[in-house]
Image (tube, rainbow, N blue to C red; front, side, top):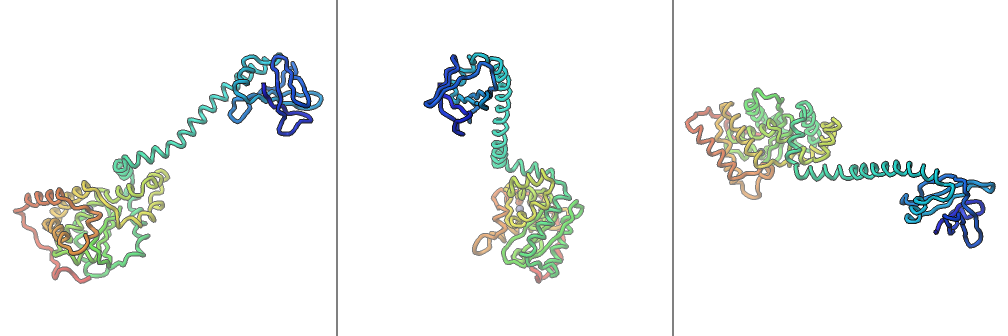
Amino acid sequence: MQARLFGPGLAAAGQACDWQPDTGLITWPTGETRLPAVAGGVRIAGFDLQGLELSWADDAGGWALQVLDAADASQVRAAPPAGWQAAFAQLAGTTRRHRGGRAIGWSALALFIAAPLLMLAAFFVFADDIAGWVASRVPQAQEETLGDASFKAMQATLKLRDDGESARIVREIGGRLTTGSSYRYRFHVVDDAAINAFAMPGGIVVVHSGLIAATRTPEELAGVLAHEVQHIELRHSLKALIKQTGLSALWALATGDLGGALAGEAAQRMMSLGFSRDAEREADSAGFDALLRAGIDPAGMPAFFDTLAKQAGSAPELLSTHPASGARSDALASRLTAVAGQRFEPLPYRPWPPAP
Ligand SMILES: [Zn+2]
């Protein structure tokens, strides 16, 4: 059978040769030798670990004979050369261990490759569930750290107007709507003509001056604030952020560094965090309750929908993140019918809209 011989006087890469296992004779065009009848070592060889290498030493030096063809190698193993039986018996034991090790190696490697892919696939399929699960496990203190860090990161891009009349009113109404909350709320007004408002995890609500200018009554502004606050209370903002930042959020949770790792990314996304229609209905409903508790006429909430609908030009930014729907206005209308007999003290802010 074909083999390769390494030894004294032969090329470093070995010499192609023919070996007859039964006689032990090894021949090549310019010479010959013989496998000794006293065994040397036997080991598995070849890239695919299907070959054999027999090694021995004589006065001239060390020799090695490689049989790399799998079929030839197994033939040799089935009928070892004279004198080599014990060495081959030993090899059989090590091979079994070797194969076992390799099987574990492959499955570990497969798992190593598959696990992140599975996680990724799972994340896309169950993004809502996973984000909800993660959000429910974030302690409030960490949520606040995340919100504060995100706000700090985006502050440079915001023109804060926190010392004006508008900001004072927003803080006052916001305070009434969040009485008794476990969050420490901070309300900010930003000088921006786009009709928008957004809620950041941990208790930060930002309102654009453009939105305040678009409202027809203070009750409409209260309706928006009540809705935004509920996105925080119900952890919608945190959940949406986790969903959008995806696996990095899971990683951050696993490493316990949610605040630091996500803040930069969060800042980029905070203004465009979108909510599901279910979340919108939830925030409407809980916001409606909050308005009632605060003694503020909840009619302002559906009224602001009309205001938004009447906006000329492109759709207000607020609607791209808080999707309006027929179901949403229907639900609000029926809640309003239920409180039709109730009288509410009008909010004491005149003229409206207030000065910036
Ligand atoms: Zn919303």
